[in-house]
Length: 119
Image (cartoon, rainbow, N blue to C red; front, top):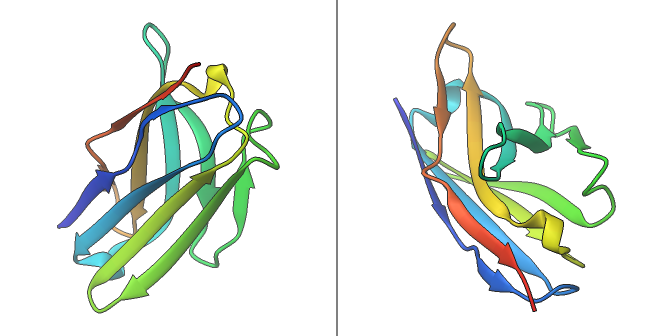
């Protein structure tokens, strides 16, 4: 079992910066790929950034060059970070971290955190 707990988020002005965190605990050794998604009302959850088991990252075109996905490890814990810079109103949404595992059919989501970009 893997638990994902998110922190960060809130209200930020356009052009500002923000960092989201996601702490994975439990059986983190089964985690394969990780990602950040965001969702706005009435829309499906969309991928923002992904990271493979080999730390290769990809970003949605809309955030490329502004967001940075990073990861760190400690004993039985994995820390995921999404650094958001030069944010725009269209970055507003609920952000979720996600972990895919080596166990077929098993993946995990964080509880979500609201990011609002507004002046």
